[in-house]
Image (cartoon, rainbow, N blue to C red; front, side):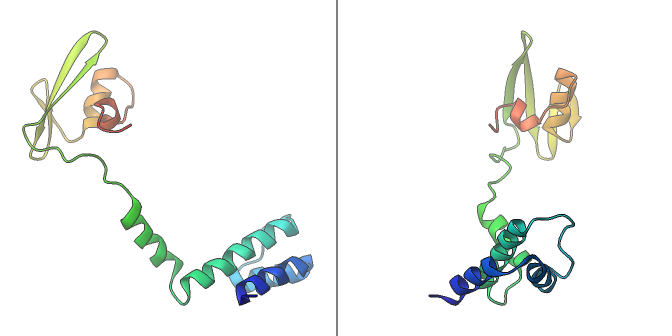
Length: 134
């Protein structure tokens, strides 16, 4: 049996007081008031497994690297001159992508969301409104 498996088995055997003591060592603060033993076991089991996964590494460093590798870009890159069309309430709206920003109805905007808000009168995600995201 691995040391992680043995440690997880040992957690299940601890009483509430021992779990609270272990919580303080693991997280540096007392457990949430009124939390049940089962919650403490689950959180401590997670902590044991993360410590095994990270070794001496930092959880923050792991999260940053996972974010960099798994977060999709904010959408397709739009080259200046690209035109976006959207029909809204029977009217077709055309937006031109500029080197920095967008143009709609002869007015420059910093974001597609500002244009979508102007068109609809409500808060919209510009990329969603113009079909660049689902």
